[in-house]
Image 1 (tube, rainbow, N blue to C red):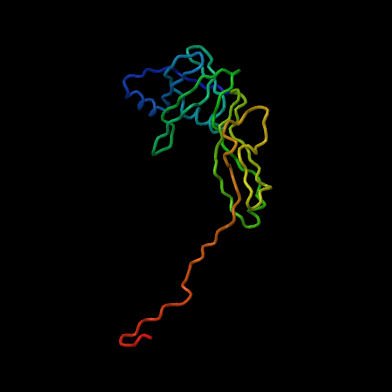
Image 2 (cartoon, rainbow, N blue to C red; image 1 turned 90 degrees about the horizontal axis):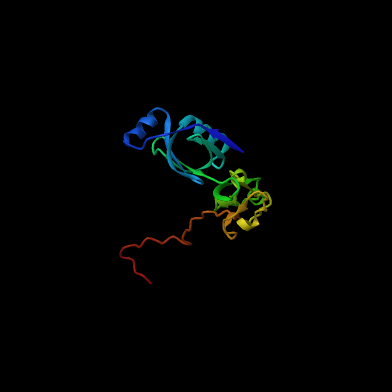
Length: 203
């Protein structure tokens, strides 16, 4: 699945043009990669934000650059520190018939039997590196934790195989485990020390 996004080529000088574009609702961007030289472009902020919100960061976005249709992935985004709005985007042009690697979010599903019996869930890995042709790249990978008891864990190697993509992350990496709850017990001395009385002889 891919979505289309209108873009325009842009000038790179002077640098003040970038701020002018942002004030007008545009995002400075660049596209490079498969069969295209690095080309500075602009995209509409609202359109790109909606595409990423509705389809995820790993969706194929088809750009029209110089009359040519380019299949791309969002490779990198730069966010504004204060507003969290997108300030700059790098689009990577891809070959739809060749595998590429991206990060996919880990989504835990179900409720662990160990948590139900008082254990604590500890998640150690929040994304995995996956490899697939662009149209088969997953936005997330689901991990069912329903059967996890206290003391159990799931590693990357435990994930079921998928026909559309391959998980590249080391199989020994631990994703999640269920541990016993630790109670904070304050240690108190067995006997309180008696105050010393001045002038009293010590035996």
